[in-house]
Length: 291
Image (tube, rainbow, N blue to C red; front, side):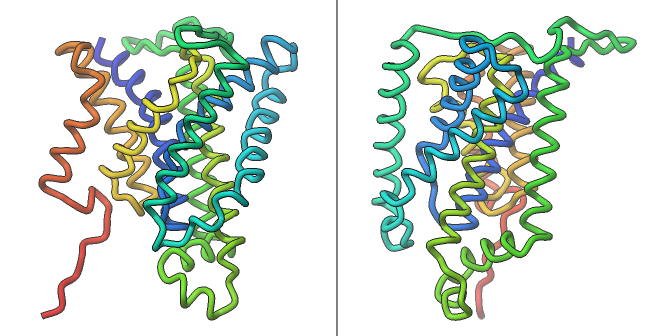
């Protein structure tokens, strides 16, 4: 049982880690938190359902098209959010993105059904169990874990090795200095938003075959992803991954060995404990005090 719970927790944790990674990317690039991040996960799942289940598009092209569609939505809405990316208007940005999340939910209810309606997508591969000695593995969980780790690795390299990734970090660290050396902050904000949405949409297409799709699923994923980002350190890419895995595994172990009734609040308990002793998170930069 323990091996199954650990693998299930790791699979869930990879999804939380992807959502956390998308949050960290946007915070590193713009200094802003997008409350509609979970709805991008939800939209990607429903678009995949429409393309693959209803329109019979092959699985992988449907997943790629779903990611492209969700990113297009983000690019189209960027002009509305552009004035709010100013760090002095962070509260306005939060309220605006909260409104966007409600708009996305309303549109999704019109397109795919109201509260209580759920959709399902067949797994990418046979969902039977694989037995490796005493370890029981669900095949689709391996696909989810492998896909999530691949995306995490790609975007870690993007930030550390590419010129655009370094521009994003420079703009986040010191917007005024970045502007003085010729970095256009509006383009940086657009790239950061687009990249973060790509990660969210990838999480959506990966989780869609292993869960029930419903309109309100995005908020729960956002909360757990945000918890993972805070636990790992809100500006740390490795911290987002570690935080996601930690939340997923702890949550699953609590549900398996203690009670499923407190499983949903596990993320908040972990946040409280970590921030009580490490306010900057596990990998966050510690504040320096001049004496």
